[in-house]
Structure formats: structure tokens, C-alpha cells
Image (cartoon, rainbow, N blue to C red; front, side, top):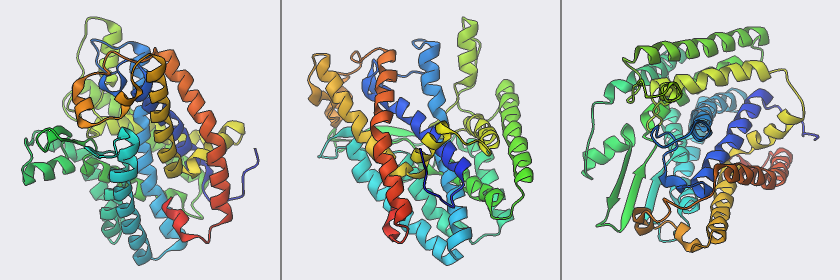
Amino acid sequence: MKLIKSTRIESIDILRGLVMVIMALDHVRDYSNTGYMFADPTNLETTTPILFFTRWITHFCAPVFVFLAGTSAFLYGSKKASKNQLAKFLFTRGLWLVVIELTVVNLAWTFDIGFGVHIFQVIWAIGICMMFLAALIYLSKKILLALGLVIVFGHNLLDGITQEGTEPLSLLWYYVHQFNFQVINDGQGMLAIAYPFLPWLGIMILGYCFGYFYTKGFNASLRKKWLLRLGFGAIILFVSLRFLNVYGDLAPWSYQDTTTKTFLSFFNTTKYPPSLLYTLMTLGPSLLFLYAIESVKNKVTDFLIVFGRVPFFYYILHLYLIHLIGMIGLSIQGYDWKKLILTPARFMSGYLFDKGFDLWVTYLIWVLVIALLFPICKRYMQYKANNKDKWWLSYL
């Protein structure tokens, strides 16, 4: 496959493309696997190793996506923009992403034109973090790096602060640091704040600072040394802190009735919001991947680059396609496909909990989704590359 020449950094696009492909697996599981999105694949009492790691491998997606969003912001600013221009771009794109999350993306998740379910997930998190980053980029690099480290390493100190109900202070805290899912408007609506922004802001800030390693003229050998140091350092720190079981995650690991379950417990870290250990566990190997892939170019990397260069476009399309396939699958099982129009009442009914296909079907559908989206994303990637003068393409 011939790629259009680009000034983009291919290793970053490859990593982003990889996590975008993996992400689709988790979303297919949500809309096709037994129990749909209502079953917990990390519940040690009910899961299997293959189901657990089907979910676990997708843990890499959100932190890498957010981290690289910060990196891309830095590189955008270093190549094309003054601080003021970068701040304007970050704020307007961030606001745009928040609006898209609450409209186009929410509709993709639910297919409910009444918008009874309000879901705040990764696109919202990236958007709101970009809006904050628009102001933070005026800080010195050292202060900004220190702030990112303090947030990522220190936010678990806030785990003991919890709120209940829908009072303004409670709602504010949910958006900042506490996962919350509740019924609102006397049962007529649901609010799901799955991505409280504070920990994700720390990850984005670190990604922004990380962009320095990819600036023009930075020594490639030195960059690879830093990738090794940071990658292995994060993994070693994860294993050490997780073994001590003292700080860094709301859910400490514990000895189970089997060695396999104990092993799974060790890696069962908290995503909502992303704990320190979850962040170290996912970003460490991702940095090592960047080290390993920097000089690699083959058909696989060319394939991944396509998704990595049009991530937002791909994200929107894959949600609608997966939800549509889920409806077809529900109908094939002999059930009413409209039950996957996820109104608040259907969310609360538990109707889908015992429906769905075996895990091998999930993998089959995943391959189908990627195969269907590849040519579309490739065409859009080429269109973007050939129309760089169109400013609005930077928002898609």
C-alpha cells in the first residue's frame, strides 16, 4: 500500500492506529458478546482468562489516545503556530469535541433520538482537557511537567473524597474526579460520567511535554534512550507499587482461590477514573512500543498508519457501525432489535444481560468491522493529505 508523503511522525501514528484498532474489539464486545455492556469482563467471579484479557488489552486505548493528543498538540504548536494560535486551536477544538460527545457520539452509543442517556467518555475528556491545556501552555515547560506529574502521581490521594446525589457540588466533583452513574429527572434520564477529567488532564499534560522528544532536530538515538528509560521505569514502578498494595489504585489486588485468579487480580487496575497504577501499566509498554517501532516499516505499519492518521473520523464511524451490527445480531438471535435503542428504561430493564454471542463471534465481528472501515479511512486519509488548505479538516 502506497502512503502519501507526510511530515507526520509515523511511529506516533502507528501506535495511535494500533490502539484504535484494539479499541474496536472492546466496543464490539459491548454490543455483541454475552451480557453486552452490562456484564463485567473483569469480575473475577464470573470471567475467564481470555475474556479478562480481551477487556484488559483495550485498557491501553484511552490513556494512549489522551497522551498522544497532548503530544500532537505540542507538535502542532512547534510547527505551525504561536502560543496564542495554539491556545485558540486547543480551546475551539476542545469545545467542539465536548459538543460532539454530547450529540453525535452519545447518539452512536444509544441510538436514542430522545437523548435520555447522557454519557461523558473519552471524547469529552479529551475536549475538556484541551480547553484547560489552552491556558496551561503559557506555563514554563518545567512547571507544566511538574503539574502533570503531580496530577498523575497524586490524584489518588483524592479517592477518599466522595459525593452523592445531584447537588451542584456533587455534580462538579463527579466531573472532576469521581465516576458516577445515576438516574435523573425522576427516572426519565440517566447520567454517566465515566471519564472525570482531572486524571486525564495529567496524562494529556505529560503527553504534551513528551512531544519535545519529537521536535525537529532532536537526536533520534537520545530519544530512543529516553523511551527505554521511561518505558521500563513506568513498568518497574507499576510492578513495585502494585506488589506493595499501599497506594495508587482504589482496588488492591488480593490472593484468590486459584493462582490464575490471583494473577488476574494483580492486573485488574482501576480505569474509572484512571489510577496511577493503571496509567503506569498502560503507558509504560506503549513507550516501549514507540521505541521498537520507530524504524520499522512494512505492510502492518502501513495498515495501522491509516487509522492513526484519521482517529476521530474512525472513532465516530466505528461506533455507529458496531451498534448497527449489534442490532442485526440481536435480531439474528430471535430478539427485538429495537431493544438496542438504549433509552433510560432499557438501560434499567436488564433485558440484555443474558443475551449475546460467544466470545469467538465477538472477534469475528471485530475483524469484519476493521475490514469494512479500512478502505473508507484510507480514502479520507488521502483526502486530508491532499487538502491541507482546508482548515476545518483539522477538527475532524
